Amino acid sequence: MPMSEPQVLSEPVKDLWGRPLRSLRVSVTDRCNLRCQYCMPEEEYVWLPRETLLTFKEIVFLTDLFSEQGVDRVRITGGEPLLRKDLASLIGMLQKNTRIQDIAMTTNGVLLAEHAQNLFDAGLHRITVSLDTLKAERFKALTRRDTLAQVFEGIESVGRVGFHGLKLDTVAMKGYNDDELIPLIEYGKRVNGEVRFIEYMDVGGANDWSADKVFSRKEILVMLSRYYGAIEPVHEISSAPAQRFRLPDGTTFGIIPSTTTPFCSTCDRSRLTADGMWYLCLYAKTGLDLRKPIRARRSREDLVSMIQSVWETRRDRGAEERKELEFSTGRGRFIDIDRLRQDPHLEMHARGG
Image (cartoon, rainbow, N blue to C red; front, side, top):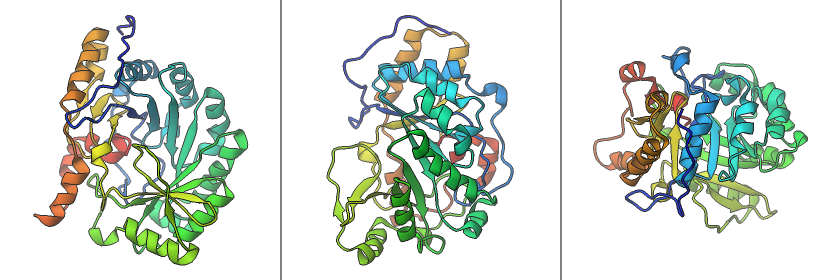
């Protein structure tokens, strides 16, 4: 692997819309121990061959290259990232890069209690846990697994070992959990976590998305204001996808309205799959293979030039384009299932969601 002296840019590289390259989502595995209906509803998938997965050393090397182009935030994702053996050692390696200001991880929480202390000791800064329901039977129906108790245990462990800034991500769906928004906020208060409601998105292809299942930002705010009273927006300068709000008692929560109000204009994130494919947009159907040039021992300069030139020609606005289909031919299925079986990269669990 080429390891010459790093180059440091004075400012992040920008795409054709002026969006900087700042945030990198790094998938460490495409496998998951749940089968959520909106994400991985099938029991079996075409998995990425294990020999193609990036080693921790390769992930650290690529992250270093990206940080030279402006990336200062890294989020570890999957599949379920805690299925990757010895993940804490990767965190420790990434933590040595002083250009990276924030290292976070998104997890379903099932294995979190077992690993929380090691992750904290290794230098992980923040944890986000996906939590769509507080009801055991509902959780089992959604995920096809009976592990909600382990998720609660994992969430409790976050504060216990010393983490701050816990976030709880909830995909809000009509007819499924739209009656749990208030209980989820109250639970968030108890565990010192900020709840973020995510509009149900039509990504991937195996799921059965339909517009009538989307519980919109407007509907969420109406429901919560009826219970809590006046809700105020939190004004802040941020490229984060969540719009944050404050309840009368000071509790904050977020809404990610990526279906009804896409945030493409400020999106500064890209995705690196577990086998080294780089995607510039969650909706992208093609990506750049970075594993092959690394293993072919291409020079560091060539790799930096490749990353920079690809981002500079980026024009992706996938969520906005997807939304436009509402007013033209209809949305339909995003990617046909037969095509998904031919190319596992097209499913969201392979690219970090």
